[in-house]
Length: 164
Image 1 (cartoon, rainbow, N blue to C red):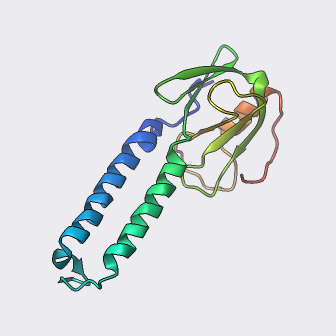
Image 2: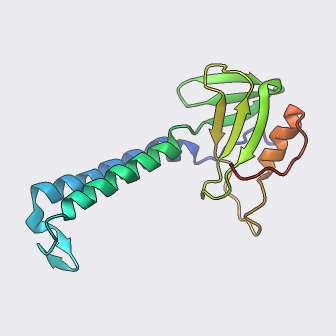
Image 3: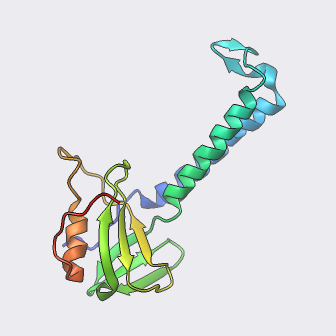
């Protein structure tokens, strides 16, 4: 069994992508306020409406909030000696599989995050969210094998759950 349940992209999705997106779009927003005549709109420089900057600012704030909402909870999850090793890349927690209460997967978000519901807080909260490895899927509505692996380890048995 592969002991690493998380995607190799977890660190990038958790830390790198949000930082780059927020800073790059933020720079464009600040530039649109400081130099509105230089904004290209519809292929014409300076043709942007007066409300353009504010609309762009709102879109940047909402987009940043959404990206942070998806990325901040992500953890790296591994299995070792009958326990989960959960890490946020700063700290690592060892969680006995007996604390796993439920395992579900959101198949509607592209990264298809898996959520492990714990019976008690062991320092990282009662929910652990992680991205499974990327794989080509013909049947996107099916759960990833990591979900069944975790359910089996916890003694929950394979179940078909509704999308979380």
